[in-house]
Length: 135
Figure 1 (cartoon, rainbow, N blue to C red):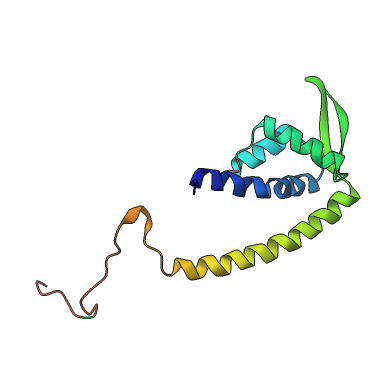
Figure 2: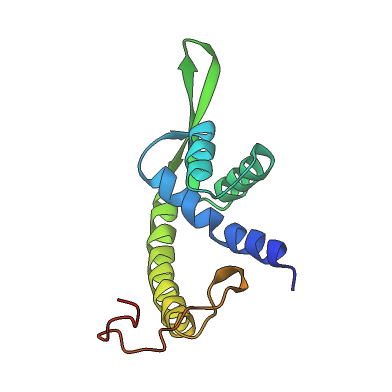
């Protein structure tokens, strides 16, 4: 398995969900979305974001409006449609179920995993209440 590819696919799988959440807070400019996604360590580039926004608009989940800017050309601000809000509500439910399911599995697995970097855990072989022999 290619770990890097799996990580990219996991991030892509939640990207639309995160974008809908960002837009659900109010009108948002695409570069502000990029900044928030990047600061959340969900790395996205413009070449990924703009086609995704177009796809979401074509699906009726979001819309946009142009706002004049004092420092350059007009800016396109994205907003959720009613369908987008209903879709986000459904995705929220799915996310909660999925997160609980994955956490249940990961928590059980975490009890039996080796420490990172292949290091071996240190296990005390003596009774911790007994003082060391050289004390």
